[in-house]
Amino acid sequence: MTDRNPYSPDAPIPARLRPAMEALGRVGRDLARRIARGPLDGRLDRTVGGNADGDAQKALDVLADAAFLAELRGTGIRWYASEEQDDVTELDPAGRLALAIDPLDGSSNIETNVSIGTIFSLREARDEGVASFLRPGHEQLAAGYIIYGPQCMMVVTFGDGVQDYLLDPATGLFTLVNTRLTIPEESAEFAINASNYRHWSKPVRAYIDDCIAGSEGPRAKNFNMRWIASLVAETHRILVRGGLFLYPRDARPGYADGRLRMVYECAPIALLIEQAQGRATDATTRILDKVPGSLHARTPFVFGSTSKVDRITAYHDLPEQEISALFGNRGLFRV
Ligand SMILES: O=P(O)(O)OC[C@H]1O[C@](O)(COP(=O)(O)O)[C@@H](O)[C@@H]1O
Ligand SMILES: [Mg+2]
Ligand SMILES: [Mg+2]
Image 1 (cartoon, rainbow, N blue to C red):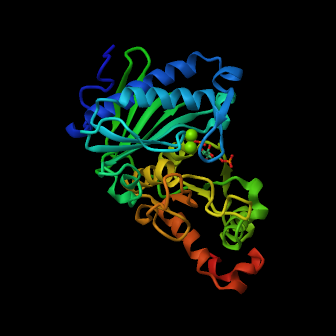
Image 2 (cartoon, rainbow, N blue to C red):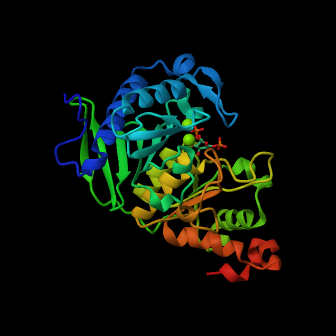
């Protein structure tokens, strides 16, 4: 067991980011053990408060946040921004990096033993904490996630392709598996929380109507739907198998910009997806070009195989009579 460096010797991690990446790996490894040991129900799953966004905070959210914050001290990080905290924390005034983190993604799944994760993003530190994060996502130096599932894996990009690592519980090492993951272009799967159907915009409804119409609709093809309610798990499936993810804006109070946060969730996942040859937008605009207005800002999020993401954008360009037509009459997309 290597205590300080949790990666196999062949891990191609840029030297400048290595101390921070090693700290992320160490905490990820500890969390994987902690989750595996349980018990999940009633302990790690217990509601202990609320975060800046008004979301319930579970014990595991708070425990993960505290563990990352403590371990990242002394690793070159000046600014630490967490989904679980209102403000940015200054870790090391001499540090040159800024780290944004969703310490525990998929909190609503904790007690059900479904995959959950951690999402992280590294940037250049600016003189001011918050300003370091209110920048376009294409400036990220690194982005990735750790998935706590049947296997614990880390998937990361340093701006030159996507690497994945598998944690070997026996040695405690994240072992390099691939250095250039790419998203399969062909897939018949889409992921969306369909219980919000009545709140969606017309283009999103039309797109999903056409998928559900299957071989009898304009797409003339059957589709399958998935919804895990864990962004990390959906991202992992799409990296492996292709497909489309949507968390659009909708008409519910508080959902004008969807649910997911730009700084902690969408920008890092978007960088990974683009580096894996996929596409990530807010339905019309590239996520990596958008500048969040505040630390906890949300954005609609659509990502996956390139042609599928482009098709959603095309539905937003349809004329009103076409988008309101019954799927059978939506001539533009008849194949
Ligand atoms: O419950 P909903 O509305 O389907 O939302 C599910 C989404 O919320 C999230 O759980 C939000 O992340 P957190 O668990 O970090 O708050 C995503 O992982 C997931 O995609
Ligand atoms: Mg999350
Ligand atoms: Mg979270």
